[in-house]
Length: 187
Image (cartoon, rainbow, N blue to C red; front, side, top):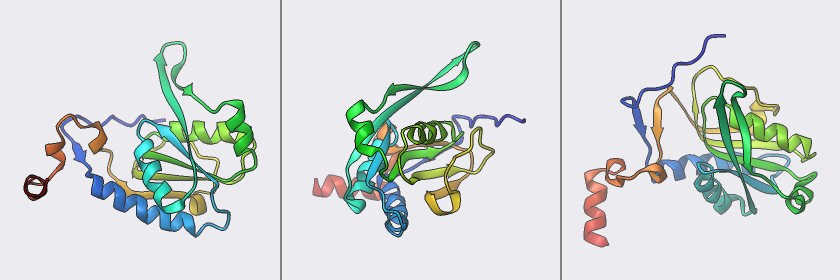
């Protein structure tokens, strides 16, 4: 299997908060039309926290959070590891319930696949996924969900280095001069 080359730091794609909000809103409209409405949003930290919070504004359902990190060594290869997962109380709470997973990007699909598999082990109901962006490239994992009905990507993008505003240490790079002028004038 041919490996995807990682994007270079020079091929950056800057995303504004307004774009994120708009794309999540569009996905939320589709999620609201699901036959089996979600009962909970599962936010994958750290990139899924802001999309999950925006999604909650439209769906009006609670958010639960998980954290995933990756081994990258000779023994494990690149494999996901739970850094924060659901305790027994939350696992009981979501058993049989419909879940919508929120994350910022579907890049390799490894994180999303790991979360879906872990949720299925805990016998949840229907699982849906909302991501801001899906990179148009070969994926390293598959999702055990109905992709046509339960997968919502705000936008399909090329394999670029995506920079979300919450990752920025220089927010002015994300803003137009007009936006900066309005902030300065109106506080």
